[in-house]
Length: 337
Image (tube, rainbow, N blue to C red; front, side, top):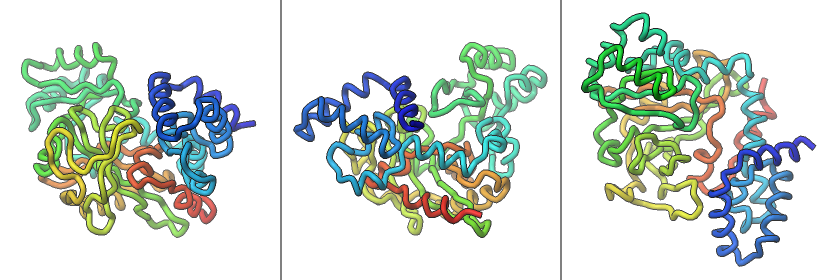
């Protein structure tokens, strides 16, 4: 019954434009009727605990039941992450301002909330006259890059910065992080972050279970949902494995960046080992949150944290490797303390 309720939630949240596009693509790729796909979609959503769009993104219309059982969908991830990251401790991650303060040891860029900027104009001055020529406006509880604005500091003063925040509906200002030159060469349109997923194991140690490079495509944010690319990074070599993928199934994978032409497959992520060491240390700072997706910015001075996510993305994790990874999490769920 719970999964049927999940299905109606997915229906309520459905992006109808994407649904129509994905359905048309799946119908053509599989040669199946619309009715056949509709019926299987409902059955699979309930049986495998996946959302409506994930039926298409995981290519359920063309894979076996055994393969389907391997994929971790929205419903499964919600329950797993709730188990690993209790509601009472999630605020450390979900509140971006609180996160930047509590994990300040790993944060090297300036930031301030709107109320702080009103009370202490010198904080705004630090942002405006700092190392970067841009400032990022975001919401402390925002998700998936929605609502983020990146504006030039030229012409700003403490009063106008607050006004810009209020007009944008945001409440947190951050210094724009200047990324490493290798990542800027790959894609200069936005900050290309490294998503690293850590898991506290039953012994209390930290396992790094995945690394993915998020790559902007003519975009100021790097989220998959905004039309960008993602690629698997080998945990041993720090190099990209294979081509990069979109979350839009109608777009083909690419081994080179569609704008800059830089080769993605085999791209070596700078300071990768330093990034792994940093998140491993960060994961133990507040171990009550056991499963975290870290967004890491890599600069010429080293890696730093941008965010930590208690509800890290299953698409970013699984789509680049083209297979379901649920067994990885099942091992932690059955063997936790």
